[in-house]
Image (cartoon, rainbow, N blue to C red):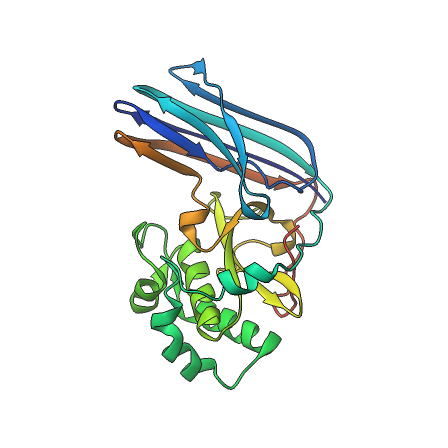
Length: 266
């Protein structure tokens, strides 16, 4: 399956800020072509690429501003990314609680609700439970909300669904993490977030929103929670986000997605 992805956004920097952008497809994903342009008041800015965990590619632009920042990225994807290997450190890292996946707080609830299950049955049960009980409502959550807030509110957006799936599975001692992706078929189109769970030695994608076919997703970044996969991170003076436009399409009809089956990203 061939896919074309792109994003474009702008922001206003009041003063000076260090900028980190995470919009490029992950290292290891086959790319036929790719371009990234970062400008400040229409003047091109030099960026430096830094490789983070699991192929996450960060692009750094220090000491920018004041002025209007614009980021434009596009890529054509051909084929599939290689199988994601197990890592002994990951088995530890992704069973621990994190900022937005408070598995320590949710462990008693998770074990009471799902304690009789294990393996694939547990993963499927958690994904179905979150899908059935959490309403997808755009703009319904705050950027600082974690899995506990999502559970109590009963609503959220893609990152909230992913955080709750991850936290419940970690609460049952199952390694789970979050990935940002380009998602052909997503409506409304945006960056998307899904959970990844270790099942029988494979990192499989779990998307409790059911909003896009998993086999068409393209990995951008991977980490413990949304703090590790943000598309824009700034330090320094104030930065106000402007508009954002994301596109992801396939070269043919979208594939069907049977959520009873396990699918790996790519």
